[in-house]
Length: 19
Image (tube, rainbow, N blue to C red; front, side):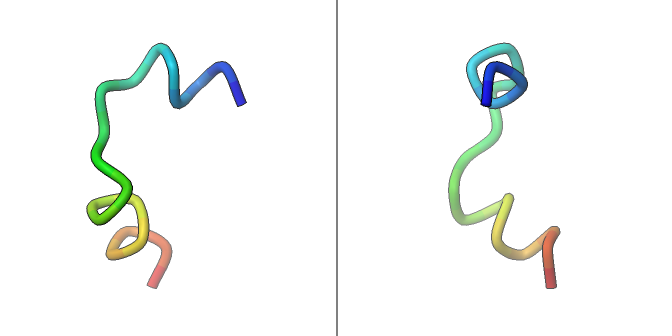
């Protein structure tokens, strides 16, 4: 889960990207 720490992506954007 270090990728999230490295990437400055919001949780909402991640959720939308997962859809």
